[in-house]
Length: 231
Image (cartoon, rainbow, N blue to C red; front, side, top):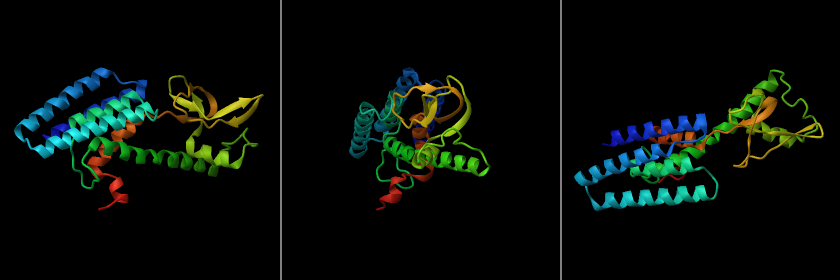
C-alpha cells in the first residue's frame, strides 16, 4: 500500500510541476482526482489496519498541512497550486517515516526540504557569473556606475541573457532611467515577466517544482531538518 501511495504522489507532483513550468497554472481537476484517490487509499488502509494512533496521526497530518499551506498562501509566500499540492500530499500519504525525520508528515517535509533546495539556485547563478567573468565576458557592461554590493547581489539572483522571449517567464533585474542602466532588484510576487535582448534577468521558477524535489529528497535522504536537530 505504501509503495502505491508513494508512486501515486510522485506521478501527481511530476505532472503538476510540468504543467506549472509550461503554463504557470495547474488544472484543479488534477487535485480533485488525486484527492479522491488519496481518501480512498487511506479509507481502505484504515479499514484493514485500523488503530487509534494511526487515525490520530492522519487527522493531525491533514490538519497541519491545511493550516500551514493556507497560512503561507494567505500571506503571499506561494500560490494556490502550491497550497493544494501540500494538502493533497497529506491526503495521499498522511504518515510516512523516512530514514531520518523530526515528524512523520511528508507533506511538510517536502516543503522544508524544497525550501533548502532553493538555496542551490543562488549558488548556481553566482558560479555561472563568476565563470563568465573569468572567461573575459563583460557582464557588467553599461552598469559601470552601479555599486559593488549591487553587482555582487545580482550575481546571486540571476544572469545576463542574450535574448528573452515572451512566454519564457523571466523577470527583469535591470531598469533604464533617462538612458542610464541600473539594477532593479525587486522579486515581489506580482512582478511582471519581461522580454528583450542582452538583459539581466532571473527565471520565475515555480515553487511546486521544489516541493516535488523536496518530496523525492525525503524518500532518498530523509528530513533535512533532522540534520540540524538530531535526537
